[in-house]
Length: 132
Image (tube, rainbow, N blue to C red; front, side):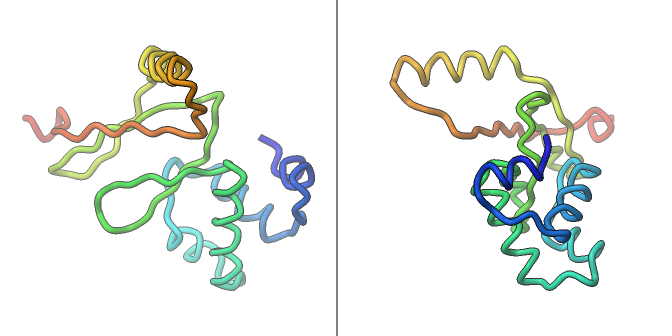
């Protein structure tokens, strides 16, 4: 994913802050606003907030609801799309590939003339470490 091309294509300015934030996000699986703020003390809070909103509107990132009252995000990488399982005891996050599930979702959407922009599947349960 080339952030500069995406921003230019959608007629948005390419700024050093946007590039820096995007490069940081590429190093994370799931991240929060606070993760970004902790890493970039020299970027204004409002700039981070606007950048996250811009990235959301351009489908560069997607929101992830971890049911912990803290909004989390991840890169919206269609080439490596995956879903998540969350342990209800230790709160660990486990990613799993969902090609068959996603295929079925898109088939159903097509039957209903529904254009999917984004989707997310969360499975909550108990991980193997906590079961022991």
